[in-house]
Image (cartoon, rainbow, N blue to C red; front, side):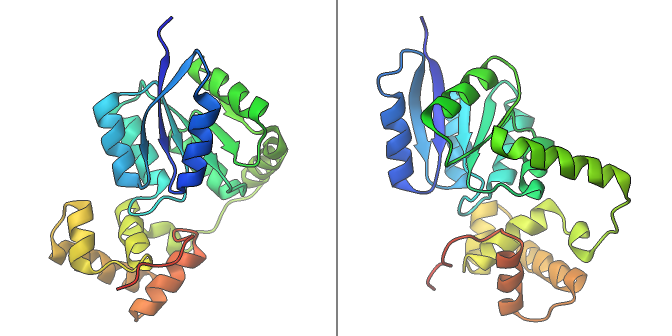
Amino acid sequence: MTKKKVVIAEDHKILREGLKALFRDNNILEVVAEASDGMEAIRCVEKHRPDLLLLDLSMPKMGGISVLKDVKSRFPETKVLVLTIHESEDFILEGFQSGANGYCLKDSGRAELFTAIEKVLDGKNFISPGIADKVLEGYLEDRRKMKTHSSWDIITQREKEVLKLVGEGYMNKEIADYLCISVKTVEKHRSNIMQKLDIHTASALTAVAIDKGLVTRPVKTI
């Protein structure tokens, strides 16, 4: 029986090692690559075309949502199981809207994780039981009332990617290199973000990135 190929995208090495240990004696799954940041995750999927991508949402350089959208647009046959600490409704809904096949919390037990993987590989959706009720309640409430748009709603996905890297402490040239765009384009994105959010300093950009959950780890030391 051919094993299913798995790529693990997780920025904490100890968690990657733990997941690999779980799968080591499994006769169904084979870890073919691992990634410690979002861009590396995409490269791994491009190279190995895995059956399953285990994806953390809080990834450096390129966030998990951006990775998810890229992978599902170019490699729709790859199933994506989000494995994260984030249990808020906003993260969960954005994950599924971006193409996730499953959403599993990191504090789930071994049995729940393997159930999630089995369902996702079988073409079914999965969500950790502990958060399913919360999501349903939030979904129904959203349908009962119209949401008012805030300035954050008009920030584009690319602008969020730039903002995340700004929040992590990267300079414009580094951001341009990471995203394969020009420095002038990075400067334009920064300017657009500041205009849309009515903020005027680099430190304010970092504060917004942290507040919106784009940055969940210490920023890069310059």
